[in-house]
Image (tube, rainbow, N blue to C red; front, side):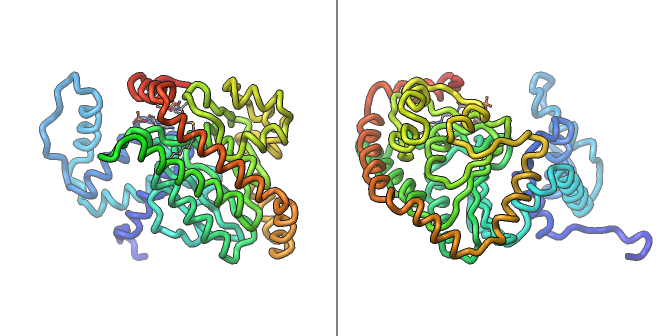
Length: 365
Ligand SMILES: CCCCCC/C=C/C(=O)SCCNC(=O)CCNC(=O)[C@H](O)C(C)(C)COP(=O)(O)OP(=O)(O)OC[C@H]1O[C@@H](n2cnc3c(N)ncnc32)[C@H](O)[C@@H]1OP(=O)(O)O
């Protein structure tokens, strides 16, 4: 590049930076967030021309000040600065996480996931960090689609992990507030059908499926872990299945896999009495394979996974099928039974009150 040439980010680089921003694991802090906001506004709308918000409108006032402070820089310069700033934030995070989630060949048709294949590993990144990766109806459908593709592609392993500070906060509770003209019975029936299909995709998944639990997990994100082949967790992760608090009942085959894995008495504390486990406790009970310190989690786990992914693909596939094969029929029966019970639960007063209370109070479970 000649001296004095100004670098200009392209629209594609700008769009990529917007996507990368969603995968940030660490909170960049308010000042940086305001600068990102301001550069984005300047890049898309030009200089700030709106009137200054009132002094009690703290949030919009801070945003206005950040945007206004950019002065007259051009849209192109703002776009370049935005791309640079996001690039700096991404590269300051664990390099292995970046590699696993943003490089490779993103199947960009997904709205709620980022799916990449690299080093023989297909990674399904749950990508609604602003909602703690709660699983919306769209996300259930997209996870099923991603599993179907990953089951057929050339990769050796499939990994599921979360974007941001949570692994996943379970079912998006607003799935139960979207009642159509046909009423709540229809909603419960459709939800039961969706859940049956969703869990079946895990039961039938043909190659090693690994959960990289990068933060707390709630509800179905915990119960479904019994259907993964290996579960690695950061020591920051917690495992909470608050069914009775929500007037619901277990799913993800956990009414069978949990007692089998850890004994009925231990499973009951989790599935009946909402006991929240630390990562170390979950590991002692056999739900988690291994726990890593948060600051080396991504590095250590991805190093291991890259080594595993060099093993012969068919051997791993057939071995998994032998280990799980005998159980498949049983698991489908358990899944069907759990979903029938849940359909009844979703129509119960206990469950409706609990969901209303979450949205009214945003009460923490
Ligand atoms: C189709 C039907 C299939 C049904 C399958 C059956 C599955 C059952 C389950 O999974 S049961 C478990 C359901 N999950 C929960 O009950 C968790 C609810 N969430 C919380 O308790 C908290 O949000 C938290 C502890 C996960 C995180 O707390 P905190 O760190 O304080 O963050 P916020 O609460 O501010 O969350 C940020 C933002 O995300 C929204 N959100 C988080 N989790 C969910 C969720 N599960 N459903 C809907 N929305 C969720 C939260 O409301 C905030 O949104 P806002 O910024 O206010 O718009």
